Length: 223
Ligand code: AMP
Image 1 (spheres, rainbow, N blue to C red):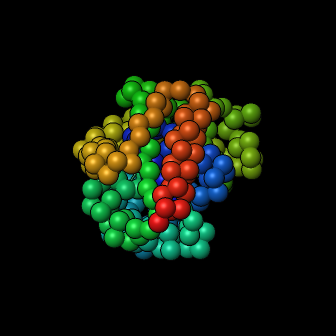
Image 2: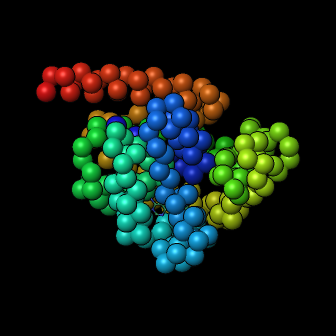
């Protein structure tokens, strides 16, 4: 199954994507993580993408699609995968279908108010070593600024600053929100209430995913 996590920046796609990865053994593919890694490693793709990321704008479709194409071709994606932060616009969604059209698809759109998003993004801290996501108000680390899992140092993403957050939300509304209708038309769209706790959001997702898995198995058996 291909699970697409829609939803604005700060809605919890990364956190929920990791829970799905653990619970269902579908690898999580975060284009934001792949890009940040490329920037850190100073690869040609990273160098090209860095300036747009700093401004809160989208990196070029070609760069991101190339990264996704390489990643989903890997053996561990054969049974399915979770996409966090991709597609981000209609062109990316269409290109994804051209790349790979075998897996049944489900789009989970995590929604919450803009005030809650801004609050979450400014409280977010990321482990500089393992990428674990914390939130100083809702999911604080046991020791200040230290990752519970690997003891790495926690950092704030440069694009989690107030002016860049505003730009990212503007880009989301303009470029990414049209995907709601795109996936509604395909009849694979589910809206999730992201104001709930992390566990409660995951439970809501589980109900949908479990039902989809049963439905897909039944459809396969009929074929
Ligand atoms: P994220 O970690 O998903 O919030 O992404 C961080 C930044 O990486 C975004 O603000 C964009 O600059 C870039 N980015 C991530 N995914 C994509 C994508 N699918 N298309 C274009 N740019 C992306």
